[in-house]
Image (cartoon, rainbow, N blue to C red; front, side, top):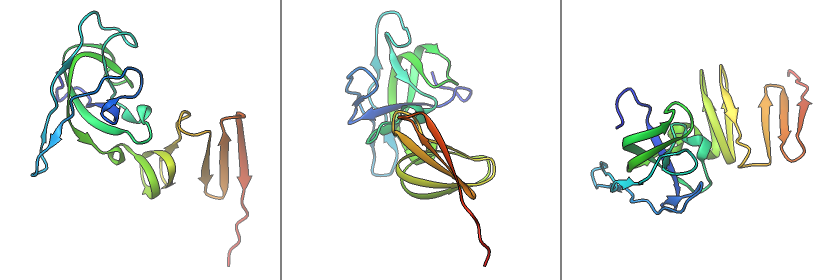
Length: 176
């Protein structure tokens, strides 16, 4: 059961179905007119739980499992759990989806320009741009893009995952 000490767990679905193995069509939560949510029905598996073999999978770090066009759901579980709730994936016996969650609340941006300050992390997809300052990190996950570009003040780094190259470009700065 999810408690105050347990990290929140999430499920990433594409058109209501599992998208990282399996094809389960999940019972989805519904949103009331007042903005509150009615959780979906409980889903349960039988047999011994084993990561990557048998169970219902949830993540505490849903950005690791982002798929273009996917929807993120907050989830709660009941009963057995295999894995570590502070890592990226756990396997549970019984779970229900309680509400939709916003990708942007997890630092996932699909388009536009975004500014992050202080101790922040952004995971960028598609055509998103982030301006970072302070102790900030930009992440481009390997399965979503074959290349990524990071601009570091007067220097840009371009990572080409196809050829395993990191190329730095220096820019000259002129003062008016």
